[in-house]
Length: 124
Image (tube, rainbow, N blue to C red):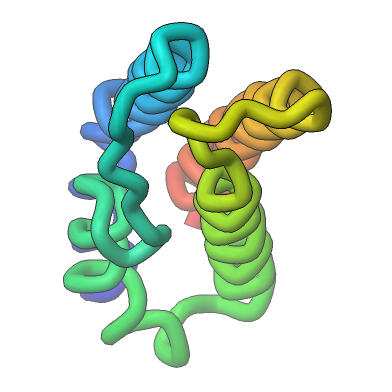
């Protein structure tokens, strides 16, 4: 039963992860134009809200290998948002470019881990 709910979420993973690429793009634009930006935590974005409502409640029921990957995904996802929150578009800093690049790396890593989770869950 827990894997069924996880599979449903992973069916939407491509769409949910693409929202992180859009998030980066909007943040880059805000920095360039020195505009306000509504940062979100890893629990406030659409991916985080769905993840917290579907995956977190069943996490302890998942097979160990699946649970380990789930926890890795959570860590990467939260780091993505934490790095983003260090950027103040109204007060650009020389380190912002490095932080944006780190967000891009984390987004790619998140996507790879989600694909790995998708493959792993199919095997279960």
